[in-house]
Length: 78
Image 1 (spheres, rainbow, N blue to C red):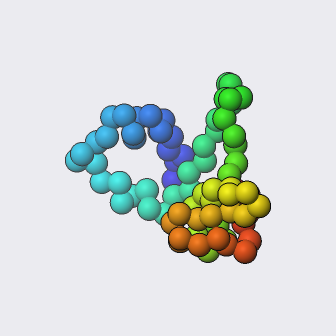
Image 2 (image 1 turned 30 degrees about the vertical axis):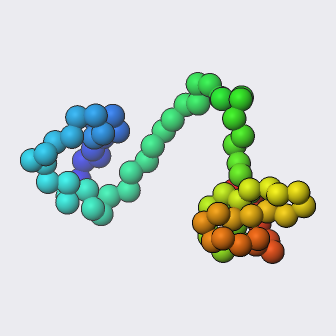
Image 3 (image 1 turned 120 degrees about the vertical axis):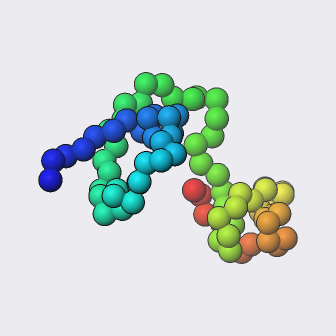
């Protein structure tokens, strides 16, 4: 079978409503990207609750998870 390539922007920006995408089910897609800039004014990670993947809020010496409504014993940087 011949390799097939398509730009991701073509799939996202120009969807083909009548296309049968089932033929892509068993394919492996490889994306090649180039980072052209970094946003320096934002944090690249957050502390998350170990009960769920949601972000926790630091309150004095503990973290609070709004999603679970608890102060988790352990938090994980993600």
